[in-house]
Image (tube, rainbow, N blue to C red):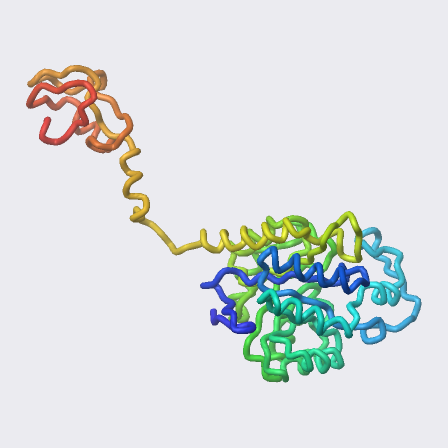
Length: 347
């Protein structure tokens, strides 16, 4: 699988997972809160901050559509247009938010939801683009993003394999050379039962690009498991405090949890290592704590070795336990004291 680069940072199986903190609408329409979220993300050690770039009018129309998902949505009963009004990040905030991220040495980019958002984000020189799950069939948007020549990260939620394949073909045909696909379950929150992480290696084999996880579950367990299955990118929503509310706060991580996500996903990547079917150099000193054959009772020269006068104990300074049946019935060539590790020259 090829690695790619986002803002100069390598992303791929040989590197620690690239962790993206999704602010979404958790700024609660306060720029001060948005900047505090940037500071919190940087303190947690994430590699990139992500926004969503749209307005209610670029993503929808005021048609009176009400969300009806039979209790499966956090936003059940809300007017869709008004929800987007409450959740969007004002475009005039983007420059200040990105500048604050750069001050911390953190990458920052966004999910554009239409072509005008791409044009706007290009003026801010973002290092990459993220395509949200509900836009992965928006071919004009895919083509516009690909035409920038920048890396593209695509969430695959609510899409069939054929639709994912279409999106990949459209992006590559339009000039996308650095692509990441994120396994995603588009329920909010997602459950462990519908996360289906075993899809990750299948996507990697099918599309030959780095794969990650856009994780809407609670906690960090699914993300850590995803890294074990090959995820190179982890995206998580975050907030300053779930108790303070916000459009996505119910399934967002708080700062201490975000820090834990960074630490544990990196630890999971380190633990993958390589295929190891032998004793490692670091383990050599521990071999002394294996069991071996020891003299348990005084044994005179010429006396037979028995299960009574020998024992298999720790440490491992004597003959290996595998030789137990070979030793029993043989005779000692010299006197042996209890506590002596048995060696071949004593037989």
